[in-house]
Picture (cartoon, rainbow, N blue to C red):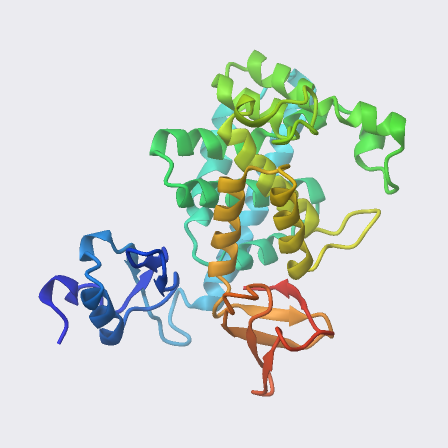
Length: 351
């Protein structure tokens, strides 16, 4: 029998990985704790107070608030958040000032609530139903940045700044020519030079609107890179605000995994590899970057996926040595080890 101090953990779901004193993974995030897990915690002397877990609410099929109803409610909240972003853009275009009260009262609650959800992949899949690429990008970036901030154990005050900054980081684009924003082809040199001005425009607009200076800095710095290869000021390392680094990474991930006029979306596999490569090249902060990879890779187990050959399945087990090539169970109950299937990749993690 498990020790009394652990008994209340049985049936709860982990919200963070549990490691032993040497850093070896004992139990993965998302696991619903059973007596066998509790015995492991006791054996490795992991304190119950250090275990991050939440109560799992199980509902019967057809019961009010069931999965289908929850998903419909989530999609509706995403749609309303997109409408509010549209109104905020219109207000900025007409008045050259950001309506901060609308941001905080209409959009921020959706971001904070959604970032708490265990399955971020389901969130991104739901956002695909949004009609406007810009609003899908903003909502996705804000949710991912907030979830990442929580994973980095940011204090509540700084996390609130991060969430607001992630909603407003691209606001300078509102002041660019609409013909440029909606251009279907790849930007030429002249177009790109104009587009890069959205960072400065956003900074000036937010400063004028009286926001916290760090929020304005995120708008200015979200295209800066660790090695100085970014813009507008070619900042390096500690010259870049940590909030800007988090939003930059979320922006890169959302851009990679979204269809663009000049290219299709990256597969999940290719997006993760691209993020990893940018960390290695010192374009993205390594601590934030590897925390991000740990966040999305640890949340794969149990997720539905679409494979590159069109088949669908569910992730059963993540291979530590090949984290983007897990063990899959297909819809026909056949098992597939993607680390041994060279011609098949995960196209998309649905949730």
